[in-house]
Length: 151
Image (cartoon, rainbow, N blue to C red; front, side, top):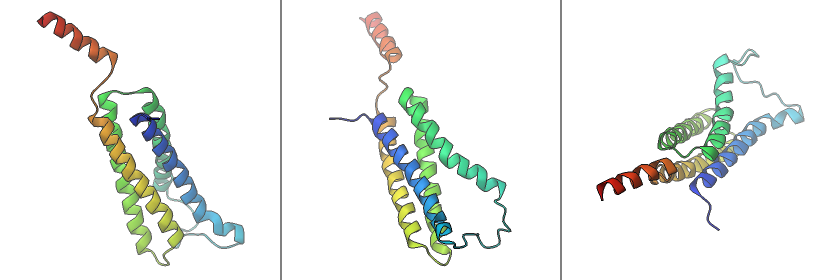
């Protein structure tokens, strides 16, 4: 059984979303045991920028899943590849920050490293998809019409 590049990309985005939810949930697990999970110097309010960033980390992959299922245009494939690279860079920065904040929470490091590796796979498959020739009917029709005119 062969899975298309689009199918692989959708599967990798779904793994990314589950991994992100798990990574977030893992950070909240101490609450179940009555531990304090308040960030140092937070004063009990999440900065607005962080809320929008977290929304983007969930919404953009969801949008990518839907659009990837229905759009095969070259322009979208380029935009999609750029988005996957951006997410990989963000995950790498997240790993670096998590490693620089004591105490290091190793289960969180492992989960974000797995997300990073998933992101690298997403980059590779997205690049392969970007390099595929456009197979849209509109393009084939133009090429066929030109070939007939040149004969």
